[in-house]
Image (cartoon, rainbow over all chains, first blue to last red; front, side, top):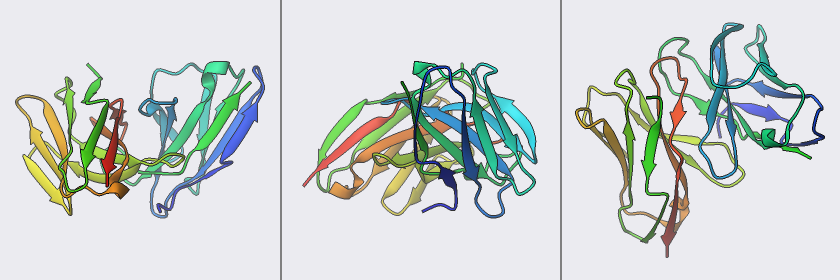
Length: 114
Length: 111
């Protein structure tokens, strides 16, 4: 088991609503990345936070936003939920900042939009 | 240019066999190539990773082979066991762990 924890584990929301997902990074890690994994597909990079600043973003619309706190935990916010947002949302923590080091994933939050 | 192509989509081997999963990439700026294992309902778990300055890396029963000129890398699982049945993802990153994942390979090891 990694030291990365995500909450909640499961969530059901209605189209048009807003959702906040949370991630606690592994001790000593200052970088948190969020990924979306649709059923049967590989994870897709949403964005990354390094020392409380956004440090890169994938091909996701602005209604996907995030925060990183001084203790390096992070939130992913999604506004105006769409049915296609139904997926497993994964948080990964790493300690490298701009360098590549091992990235460890949490167990994910399964979001269902109805 | 950001894609990582993974094959096969699924694979069935007998216990003790050596499944091989292949990945190809286009972006020559990638400098980090990890493999992840994912069980249903769980997050991906890091298995092994390689950088382009070496051609092979072994950790336990898992081996990565890396061919920089062909822009390909592969995962070999020695003496495969039923407990290895899972989905395997290759990935690549240029810097900062912004991972680009392959589509995944569903491995089933028959006992």
